[in-house]
Length: 120
Image (cartoon, rainbow, N blue to C red; front, side, top):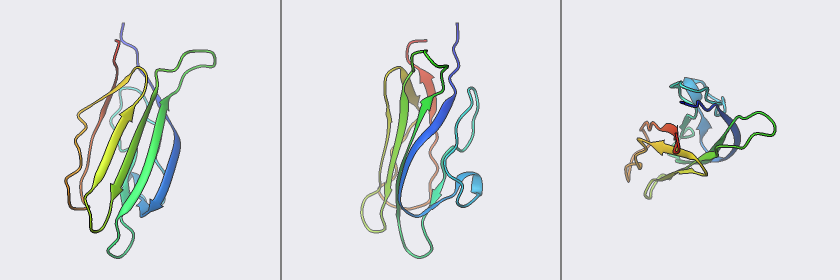
Protein backbone atom coordinates (compact mmCIF):
# COMPACT_ATOMS: atom_id res chain seq x y z
CA UNK A 1 0.00 0.00 0.00
CA UNK A 2 1.42 3.38 -1.00
CA UNK A 3 1.16 6.12 1.61
CA UNK A 4 1.21 9.78 0.68
CA UNK A 5 2.61 12.47 2.94
CA UNK A 6 1.68 16.14 3.02
CA UNK A 7 4.58 18.32 4.23
CA UNK A 8 3.68 21.33 6.33
CA UNK A 9 6.07 24.30 6.43
CA UNK A 10 6.80 25.05 10.09
CA UNK A 11 10.09 26.84 10.68
CA UNK A 12 12.54 29.22 9.01
CA UNK A 13 15.36 31.63 9.70
CA UNK A 14 16.54 34.36 7.38
CA UNK A 15 19.86 36.15 7.62
CA UNK A 16 20.04 38.06 4.36
CA UNK A 17 18.43 38.34 0.96
CA UNK A 18 14.80 38.19 -0.16
CA UNK A 19 12.22 35.37 -0.07
CA UNK A 20 11.18 34.89 -3.69
CA UNK A 21 8.86 31.85 -3.72
CA UNK A 22 7.09 31.17 -7.03
CA UNK A 23 8.67 34.37 -8.42
CA UNK A 24 6.80 36.49 -5.86
CA UNK A 25 8.93 38.58 -3.52
CA UNK A 26 8.32 38.51 0.22
CA UNK A 27 6.37 35.26 -0.03
CA UNK A 28 7.69 32.80 2.57
CA UNK A 29 8.19 29.06 1.96
CA UNK A 30 4.99 27.05 1.54
CA UNK A 31 3.62 23.63 2.48
CA UNK A 32 3.76 20.76 -0.02
CA UNK A 33 0.72 18.58 -0.82
CA UNK A 34 1.37 14.88 -1.55
CA UNK A 35 2.25 13.82 -5.12
CA UNK A 36 2.88 17.44 -6.14
CA UNK A 37 5.78 19.22 -7.80
CA UNK A 38 6.10 22.89 -6.85
CA UNK A 39 8.52 25.57 -5.74
CA UNK A 40 8.25 25.45 -1.96
CA UNK A 41 11.21 27.73 -1.22
CA UNK A 42 12.69 30.49 -3.34
CA UNK A 43 15.36 33.02 -2.37
CA UNK A 44 17.45 35.66 -4.07
CA UNK A 45 20.19 38.04 -3.07
CA UNK A 46 19.33 41.53 -1.85
CA UNK A 47 19.91 44.46 -4.15
CA UNK A 48 23.62 44.97 -4.60
CA UNK A 49 26.42 42.41 -4.50
CA UNK A 50 25.20 40.42 -1.51
CA UNK A 51 24.78 36.75 -0.82
CA UNK A 52 22.08 35.07 1.22
CA UNK A 53 21.74 32.64 4.09
CA UNK A 54 18.60 30.88 5.29
CA UNK A 55 17.16 27.66 6.66
CA UNK A 56 13.72 26.17 6.31
CA UNK A 57 11.97 23.06 7.68
CA UNK A 58 8.90 20.99 6.86
CA UNK A 59 7.27 18.12 8.73
CA UNK A 60 4.55 15.73 7.72
CA UNK A 61 1.01 16.74 8.49
CA UNK A 62 -0.63 13.95 10.50
CA UNK A 63 -3.87 13.77 12.45
CA UNK A 64 -3.63 14.28 16.19
CA UNK A 65 -2.43 11.14 17.96
CA UNK A 66 -0.74 9.59 14.88
CA UNK A 67 3.01 9.09 14.67
CA UNK A 68 4.99 11.52 12.51
CA UNK A 69 7.06 10.30 9.55
CA UNK A 70 9.65 13.00 10.23
CA UNK A 71 11.06 16.34 9.10
CA UNK A 72 13.06 17.82 6.22
CA UNK A 73 15.39 20.79 6.69
CA UNK A 74 17.24 22.86 4.12
CA UNK A 75 20.18 25.06 5.09
CA UNK A 76 21.58 27.44 2.46
CA UNK A 77 24.62 29.70 2.75
CA UNK A 78 25.49 31.52 -0.48
CA UNK A 79 28.01 34.21 0.47
CA UNK A 80 29.35 36.85 -1.82
CA UNK A 81 33.03 35.90 -1.69
CA UNK A 82 33.47 32.39 -0.27
CA UNK A 83 32.26 28.86 -1.06
CA UNK A 84 28.54 28.10 -1.27
CA UNK A 85 27.20 25.59 1.24
CA UNK A 86 23.91 23.75 1.43
CA UNK A 87 22.50 20.78 3.30
CA UNK A 88 19.25 18.88 2.92
CA UNK A 89 18.65 16.88 6.10
CA UNK A 90 15.90 14.39 6.97
CA UNK A 91 14.80 12.71 10.18
CA UNK A 92 12.98 9.46 10.93
CA UNK A 93 11.27 7.78 7.97
CA UNK A 94 11.47 10.56 5.37
CA UNK A 95 14.12 10.28 2.65
CA UNK A 96 15.27 12.77 -0.01
CA UNK A 97 16.34 11.76 -3.52
CA UNK A 98 17.85 13.87 -6.32
CA UNK A 99 19.51 16.42 -4.02
CA UNK A 100 22.72 17.89 -5.45
CA UNK A 101 25.20 20.04 -3.57
CA UNK A 102 25.51 23.63 -4.73
CA UNK A 103 28.38 24.64 -7.02
CA UNK A 104 31.26 26.27 -5.15
CA UNK A 105 30.60 29.65 -6.76
CA UNK A 106 27.69 31.55 -8.26
CA UNK A 107 24.33 32.80 -7.03
CA UNK A 108 21.92 31.55 -9.71
CA UNK A 109 20.83 27.90 -9.49
CA UNK A 110 17.82 25.67 -8.92
CA UNK A 111 17.76 22.48 -6.90
CA UNK A 112 15.01 19.87 -6.78
CA UNK A 113 14.31 17.18 -4.22
CA UNK A 114 12.01 14.17 -4.20
CA UNK A 115 10.66 13.22 -0.78
CA UNK A 116 9.75 9.58 -0.06
CA UNK A 117 9.02 7.37 2.90
CA UNK A 118 12.04 5.04 3.38
CA UNK A 119 9.93 2.10 4.56
CA UNK A 120 7.17 1.95 1.93
